[in-house]
Length: 189
Ligand SMILES: CC(C)(COP(=O)(O)OP(=O)(O)OC[C@H]1O[C@@H](n2cnc3c(N)ncnc32)[C@H](O)[C@@H]1OP(=O)(O)O)[C@@H](O)C(=O)NCCC(=O)NCCS
Image 1 (spheres, rainbow, N blue to C red):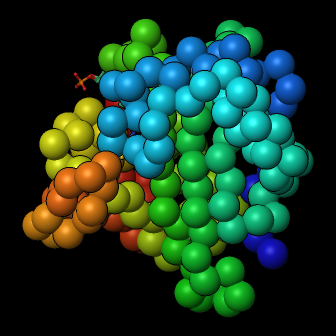
Image 2 (cartoon, rainbow, N blue to C red):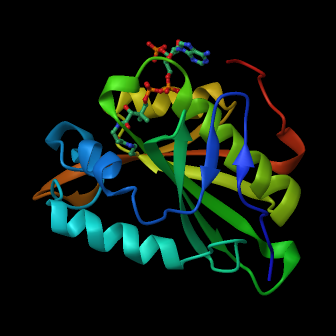
């Protein structure tokens, strides 16, 4: 089983497992309607956030041993968002891919934190897990998320038209991707 050693530290951030005590920070962004507009589920209640933190705290506490891992992104002691990595093809090294995603608190937007965290999990996926491809899917109208992909150097490979039934409507779905031999790419901040 591939492993990613945690925590992952970047210039400004720490990516780590969730732990008890993160509830208030997570509730502050996961309860906001605009934050969950493009991600599954409704704004969360305090109780739902407590369950979510508890569930994630047990997953991959020290190392990534599960195909799906959501990491808390900490800035100066506060959880400002989370990043998700979904690994596919874990049985054989040659067939490994990773889907990545991100959710951040609105009050920290526009400072490059999501890009910095996404770059760190992309780096871990390529260098530590040895994946062949890192990809992301999103609604093209979620331009902030699309820009994160672009800053990582990802290629917009497809837009599937009204291909996803999401939140009671048909939505377009864009796929962005980057191959191992294209990383590190772009180098934009
Ligand atoms: C998607 C999301 C994480 C993007 O957040 P963001 O703040 O735009 O992204 P970053 O933290 O990477 O910040 C990038 C912005 O900071 C600016 N910035 C400032 N300092 C920076 C730095 N040191 N490094 C990089 N960018 C910096 C960039 O220019 C960029 O601004 P721009 O988008 O106007 O060009 C956020 O909108 C979000 O959480 N949305 C809700 C959840 C969601 O939709 N998730 C994705 C589902 S597919």
